[in-house]
Image 1 (tube, rainbow, N blue to C red):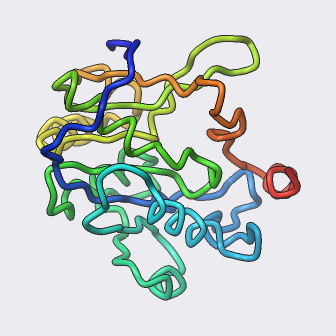
Image 2: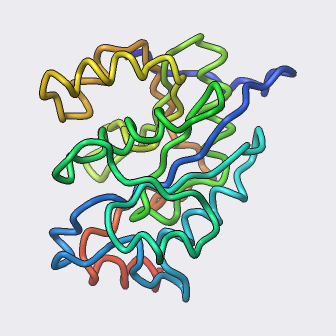
Length: 217
């Protein structure tokens, strides 16, 4: 995985992007609750995430999709197409990736989880710049954690739709680990560690208490 070390200007010719909100998990650490429908700042998390996607800097999103596996009518009320996993059994983020890539009608797909509502407003711009500058299959966000280590945030990524063939093969062979699949691709890691970056940007709320703490700031 290459590490992006420089800032790149947005190219004049931009490739169209579809956004995908990942809300298909079991919510096991939240007592089985549907995470995407939990309240955050007066809105369901998935709707808050969708609206934050609409505010992204960089290329305008051609469409936003939602990946959900239950309470589909509630998600449909947010006004975006809703698609369940095409893999059975709550198979994790890769199942959401697969669903999004199968439904994506643009050259690029941007994925964000519904439980990390403070992701950067320039996420798309920075990933898009890096993907095109490095001619990569995928651009993935990276964030420094409390131990000082830069760690990939693989559910925050911009990928080319051509990776669908690779993902189909990987999942049909039983693969479910996101890192094992992305390691097969030409991936650029984009650090989000500039002075203006919110240290909470990639904090995901796995419990009700963590969600409340994130809301209270």
